[in-house]
Image 1 (cartoon, rainbow, N blue to C red):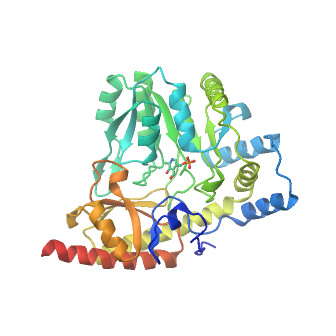
Image 2 (image 1 turned 90 degrees about the horizontal axis):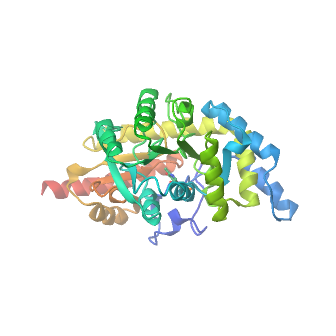
Image 3 (image 1 turned 90 degrees about the vertical axis):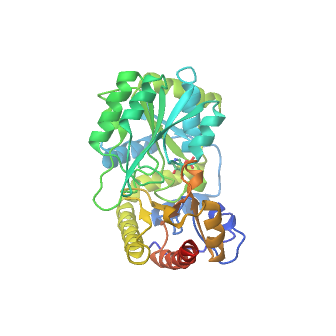
Length: 386
Ligand SMILES: Cc1ncc(COP(=O)(O)O)c(C=O)c1O
């Protein structure tokens, strides 16, 4: 389990976008090990059936999702509070379209998942940044500035929880404070919880939907794609207990024909949400171990690099500003050592000198990557002292 699978020449964006031979990418957020066996078995069975006609969502499908949400996120929903879509980014785009007349600005907390910038722009809205506050690699929401932005009339916010790229899993007091603030200013909260199942050590994930009793104008966005490494199958779920919001959402996604994931993605979701709880727990153990290896490695070899304190996701955010080098220059040097990581500047225009490293891979691959990273950093350190 969690062994390296050779993904070269498999149309993997992560592995095939770099033309350099022998380059190990720690970039795009998918995993370099296989999906759980029940998912692969269910897909094989469906493929062997040999017919791939039009498909509907049966009761079993909804019951599986309802049960998964209850088991893992501890809230109850009914089938009509779920809309199935074909990706979280597209789902957020449609939510913003649905709320078109509510706000010109969309608040995001930066640095954050790069596609948020693009989807806000495509929805003809303005990115409004609430920069996260950092202390020793621990990132927090800036509530004072958030209240200021809310008071300025920005009525839509995308929350990323767990937060890509800094790995925060927001705690009860933070989420409650956010919800009460949103209520005070009538702000719609769109909570991207795609990384909800990837929780390290003894951290606990709390969904925003747990606060529905306090405030109703919110929607959550989940998917099996990150957890079970099936992003290429394109299936995601939008959940809201607010019936009016859900009705409007269904209407707008109907108009955009955005509710027809493939038969194979439906098959994979069912198996993932029904038969893989144990695998999920093992994956979290594996990722916690990988993160510890990264921490120990940097502590020993390059203590000046500031690592984000990762509570969830398989992404760590590295502050390498002491090297006084741009992301672009560092990337060239990294390439010389046959390794690529995410450039900080794609997650925020202010993140020059930061990098994102995806550690959803075998421990062996991670160690090889750290070796190459360290060789690169040594050269860059020598250059800064010259
Ligand atoms: C926070 C976040 N949201 C959404 C996505 C992408 O979701 P999808 O592929 O379902 O559009 C990612 C992928 O990395 C992500 O990190």
